[in-house]
Each structure stands twice: as structure tokens, then as C-alpha cells.
Image: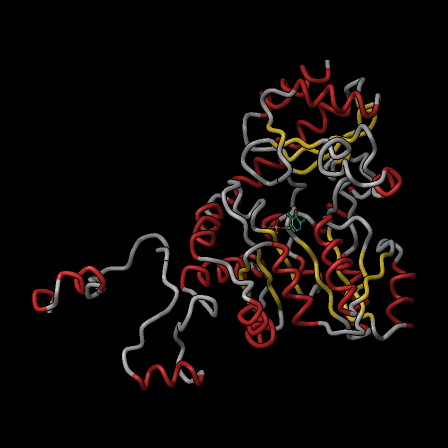
Length: 398
Ligand SMILES: *Cc1c(COP(=O)(O)O)cnc(C)c1O
């Protein structure tokens, strides 16, 4: 047919598919919609009688392949099924979870030291829509149970473990037991660990969110998020519908970058953990450092709990400089090898001084309440050779 149509038409039209053998790696389906073979097929797909793609906001083969992989990783070895959906960011995964599971009048019970964006999403976006957030110490299980028992509008318990900046952990099994007992929803942000280091489904949690931007991708080249749920019907129903209608879907290019990054997830997480432990041990004996927060150190208050829930301790740590704010600024100015960047989970070591960077506009009292002291430095330890990272920290501390 190609020689019978005009030059301009030839420019416009797709050539017939030459697909013979399968591509070895996941292809990027850069298409907004999918063509139906016949009107009958179109009708059946729209009615849900036949599986098929329609429009990439509803679903896309590249995006779904990555979501399926994440669901398999989160359930690996657990003898259970789960379903994952990818989103345009970690924040949109969390927002979609809230929109799909809660309504005006419901309340979220959570901790004060969540990822800052999540706290702001809950208080600045959902609070005005009638979904209130209650902050409490989730280590205090009696208080948690009392709040849930006495207030039936508390529909969701949302937590992060380990959490910034002190790597404090909460007991996922104990918290999920409470939500099950009172028929509420539990959700955890598993960004810091990835399913290689921690599988919250094992402890009974209902929903897992990820900023795949961080360790799952690992290379700092895409923004995306994931939500994994053990209630497959809910994931395929209300949550998929909310994603599709709110347009919080991931795009195939970012999905493909996550897919590529995840191939080395196990290798990277092993190395992140190994390097972070070596660095934590180096910092712990340094005279200018007053405190090191790393779950892998026996000095960490949650070391035993972390050991119960996590396979290894990951790449995140923080430490306090004895001489406060000025020491923090001087230290950051001397850093050469590590990168000053406000993200985490990349292959290279990233360093942040919250008091002069991410938290500079936050009142000091509030910052201190969340453990962010003047001299606190956060490290996302990369997979470089540990001695190069240690040498940089050592010269910057001198
Ligand atoms: C980065 C991050 C988020 C938000 O994810 P985005 O991909 O930036 O939207 C949520 N939770 C944690 C723990 C994070 O580190």
C-alpha cells in the first residue's frame, strides 16, 4: 500500500509491525493510545471483557511491566499475591492512596518525623479537604491502640521505618496487628529500604508506597512512585480508577529508567549497606562527631527492631558535629568527593546539612523537635569505594 499513498500520507502513517522475535529488554511504548484490530475488539476492551490497552493514562505495557516487577519483589518468598501501580512521583502515589481509600471526615494517624513532603501533603492539601492528620509517637503502642479504639474516624495508620533523620524505626508487625484488630488500613513508606532490605507485607501491612526516584531506580535520573497493595481487587478497582481519573500515572520513559536501575538493586543495596556501616564506624570514633545515627550500629536505639524487620541496614545515616551550625557549614564547604544534593538513594554519595539547606526556612523549634539539630549532617552513602568516601569526610572534618 505504501507506494499508492501520497508522500505526505507516507510521512504520517505507521508502517506495518515487523515484530517477529521478542525484544530482549523491555521496550519503551511511547504511545498515547493503542489501535484496535476491530470495532468488536474495541467494544470488548472497553467493556472489560478482553484484556487490552486503550490509552496510556489508563495503562501502558512498559509502565505495567515495571509495576509487576515491583509487586513480585515486594512479595518474593512470601507466598502471597499483590498488585502494584506506578505513579508520576512518590508524592502522587501517596496522594492517590489517600484519595482512593479515605473521604472527608476520616483521619490519618501518623508520626511527626515523616518525609517532609508527606507531612505537608497531609496537612496542607488533605486537611482542608476534611481529612485530618493526627501526629503521635508510633512507638507508644498503647496510645496508638487507644486512639484507634476510641475514634472510629481514624481510618488509616501511616508510617515510615526507618525515618529521617535519626533512622528511628517503628514496629510494623505490632502496628499492623492493631489496624487488623480494629479493621483499619495500614500503609508504610518503604523508600529507604526497598523490598530487598524490608518486605512490609511479611508483617501484615496493607499498602506499601515507594518513591522509586530513590533506591529502586538508584541512578537519580527519573521521578516516579509506586503503590503496592495486598488487596488486588482494591488495586485493580478503586485505586486504578483514581490513578486514571486524577492522571497520576507514570510515563513509559521514567518507568523504563526504573526498570533498568532495578536490575542491579540487590548488588547496589548490598554495597550501600556495606559502605554505610564502614562509614558509620569511622564517624563513631571521630573526635569531632558527637553522635552517629545508623541502624547497623549496636549503639542505635532501634538496632534490635531494625534487625528484626530489615535484612541489612541500607545506605542512609546521619551524624552530629560537636560544634553546631558553623561546624556544619564549614564541613560542607570542604566536601570535595561527595555531592551536596537534596535527594537520596543514588549510586554516588550525597550529603545534606538540613539546618542550612532543606530546613533553612523551618523555625528552629520545629526543626529541633524532629531531631534536626544545627550540626546534623545526613548522608546517602553511595556504592563508590568506601575509602574514597571516608577520605573526603576525614579531610572535611579536619
Ligand atoms: C523522596 C521521598 C518521597 C517523595 O517522593 P518523590 O518521588 O520525590 O515524589 C516520599 N517518601 C520518602 C521517604 C522520600 O524519600
